[in-house]
Each structure stands twice: as structure tokens, then as C-alpha cells.
Image (cartoon, rainbow, N blue to C red; front, top):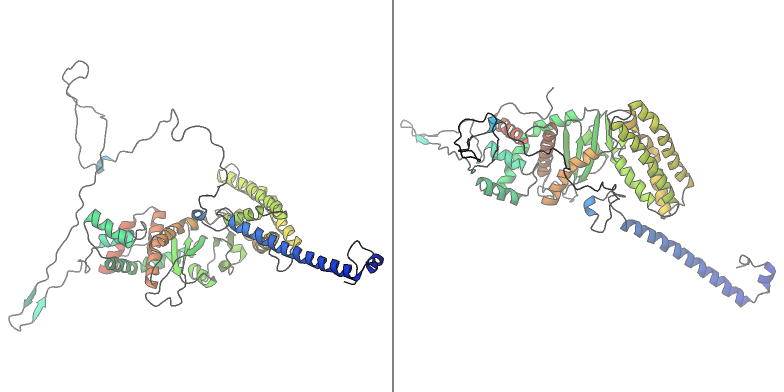
Length: 496
């Protein structure tokens, strides 16, 4: 070191022995190395603490992964009253079924006065009604068709009687087949539990292979309603979309690379569509939405939706809030900026809920949210302008990167304030995907491409019909009959 260390004059430095100078230089270099190591360790420690602290509040982890040690956010203080109906509440017992659904009426008349013993006669015009609902023993109806084969006395040719057109060619009828499909979708049971339920409840013994065959035949019957539903959903003004992992095997050779598989969902006002594939990419998103989707897409910030113009997007605020919470939980300046952004978000949703409760009108909502929007974007801009060094992995660098990613798509955060009728989150899509997640945990995915198609079609039918308040079992039965025997195929589209 030719120049003296800070705080030492050139004259003093030159006057010191060479050995002393070399020792000081070596110690200063060691201190600098230790400082560098300490900075790296502090950065690594902060990163590990952030990873340990990840939960459903500040990341995309599901709530089920939070673990027993997770402390949820504090709820509002209770009123101190016991749970349930309060004193004076009229209450509501089980509703009586209408008289046309009553199979048998049993009249009960008192024989004598409970006070003096006088014999009583007559009829109470408004008796107390008590209904008992019971399930009769369930026995499957088995119809045996005997096809006689007769030999012609003239030419000795044997001729066998054919099955009538209205008789099911398979061993299991339309209603039972529809139930097998229902138990794999609306009620996500595994193959073994489906077998056990049919055996114990109906007395029907069925193999796993027969269950798979029935569901594949049902999937073929649902092809036309599925295409109609997809075409209809792509024409809707708003779609809530999301995706989740859906393991797909290679039993049919269609997944030789053993890709994970993904279940996509598009929720519209009256139709919900599921599509399962092997990709989580922009091409898969286009396959779901179509090439010419003209409505608003409500989603997270996943890059697969970047092919859409920002004017067509509403970014999910639930995901943004998790990012802001992660920023606020970091040390230093990150905590300050995170708290500021979360405060603006809370102000925004106070106004939003007031409008939802009809406390303010639409124009008042837009006017009140305008300064909140300006302050939110300005805060993001301030964080980005402060910047960070290239390659830095500190908590502050993560904060800057998050804000830098939000700024280019910030206009997509406010679409719900510009177009009435759009929700600020894609919670509708996440709720729709829960059924798929439950099935994934029960059955660990599907084993073939045809199985993926079958699952997507059954999920589409059951979710859409529940959305419309229609009977899923009846629909599946009608679709089976129309496909395998001929007739009018039922539609998933709402009545005009």
C-alpha cells in the first residue's frame, strides 16, 4: 500500500518501520475480507429468514402449508357474546317439505282431556306437523334381456334377435353411469371409495376398470357440450382465470418427458371451463382463452397472460397484497415502503367496500380512489429510482425488483375502477380450482391424456351446472342417453 490508511498522514506513514506498515496493510485487507464475508452472511441470513417466514399471507403458498406454528393475522375483537342465536332470536328449525312430497300421512288424535279425562272428538284444522325423513332400502333394478338365436328350417341359417335401440349396450345403465361420473367430479372420490360406496349403498359390485371405462364413455358424451361451453366463455366480457398443477402420467405414451401437467380454469358469469394440458405457458393460456378474446381477463401477474393488452387485464389484488406484505416484513427501508403501500391498499378497499355496500355511488368511488392510485404508483416509482446494485441479493434488492415488475403493468391494477362489474381479484377462479386440487390430493392426478380430458369435461359440467343451479346428475344421464342412443344433447349454456 503506497498511500497511507485513512487518518494517517504521509509523513507519519513513511516514518514507520516497513514491517509495521506491512502488518497494518495485511490487517486492513483482512478486515475488508471479513466485512465482505459479514455482508454476504447477513444477506444470506435475511434471505433464509424471509424463506422461513413465508406463508399464505406473503407468498403464493396455500394456507394448508402454513403449519401449526403459523399465527394468522389478528381478527377483530369479538363482541363478548356467545356464538349462535342470541336471546330473543326467533330461530329457524328444519323446514317442512311440501305436502306433495309427503308419501304418507298419519293422523294422531288425543283420546281424552289431559286435565279432567273427558273423551275428546273432532279434528284440529291446523294440527302440529312433524315429518320423519327416511331412506328406503335401495336395491338396483336388474333387467335381463335374453336374445334368442333360432335356426331357419329352410336354409339352416341361425338368426339372433338384436337388442332394441333403447336398451343400453353396456352392463351399466345411463343413470348408474352418470352417478359414476358424478362420484369422480362433483364428489371427488377415489376409485376404491367409489367401488365401496356403490357396493354398500346400492349393492352394485363394479371393478376399477369398469369405472374407468364408464367415465371415458361419459367423457365422449360430453364432447359437444364442452365445445359449446368453451366457445360461449370466450365471448364473455369478463373472465377470471388461474392454473394449478395437475400431475399427468404416461400410460398412453402422450407424456414421454413426464411433464407435470397443469389444470387451467376460466370462470365467466354463467359458464366455467376447465382445460388440462402439459404446459404452463403463453400458448396454453391462448388455448384456453382463444386467439381473439376481446374481454377483460382477471388474473395474477403470471407472464403467460402478457400477450393481452394491459387494457384487457385486471391484476389480482390478492396476489399484490401478498407481495406488499412480504416487502413490509423485510428490514430497513423495505418495511417503511411496504407499510406505506399496504396503507394505500387498505384505503382503496375501504372505498371499494363502501361502494359494494351501496354507501357511495360509482362516480364517488372513482373520485375517491384517484389520489390513492396516484400515490400508489408514485411510491412504486420512488422505490425503483432508489435502485440497487446489479447482482445484489439483499432484501432491499428484492423490494426494488418487485416494484420494478409492478410499474410496467400498474395500469392493470385499476381496471376494476374503470369498468363497472369487474372484481379486483381472481378469487372466483381460485375457488373453482379447489375441486381440482382436492382431486389431485385424493387421486394424485391422471395417468393419460384421455384421463385429463375426461377430468376437465366432468369438472366443467359439474361446476357450470352448480353455478346455474341445475341438476348435475340429470344432465349427465341425458347426455349419456343422447350420445349412445340418439336424441337431443343437453346444453351447458344458460336458457336465452
